[in-house]
Image (cartoon, rainbow, N blue to C red):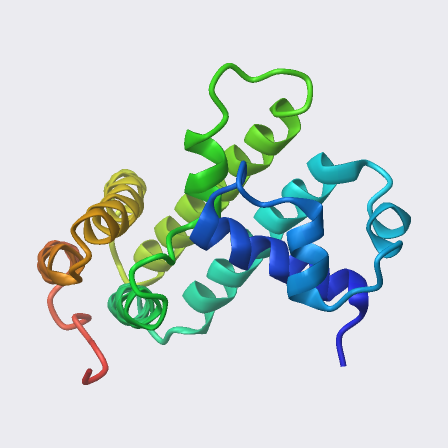
Length: 197
């Protein structure tokens, strides 16, 4: 059983994913999580900024666990795209990425926004490192793996944005297939494995 604090962090990430950071108030997080009313500042003495930072960390950890659990880099990419397509369908195309949401809404970063932007930058850097490590583990050379990791992450996040705007998962599916082909071609012969989808 998760604690009220953990539920609040998860709720914040889910609400930011669908509404954006600016439209997610602490009262919304309390209602969504079912946490007691006075608990917000007990668990998050740094206020909304601390809650947003921890929601970004939660989203970063979740994606890292997904990437690490896949048997190969191709499987990891397949699972990311398949899961996101399902999230889009289930949320009526509202489910984006909470890390992207806090990044694009920041505008001119003031004192309150800088820590959240720093956490978002750290999340993207972590995802790139994990993707690059997965690619290297499957035989892609060092710098090529780093370049492909940036490409995969950028294409994935961009495809989500386009799919949400168009309310159609077709951009996500197209980008998924193209990335799979690029990764497959970058793998050494004999190591190109992919679990049946």
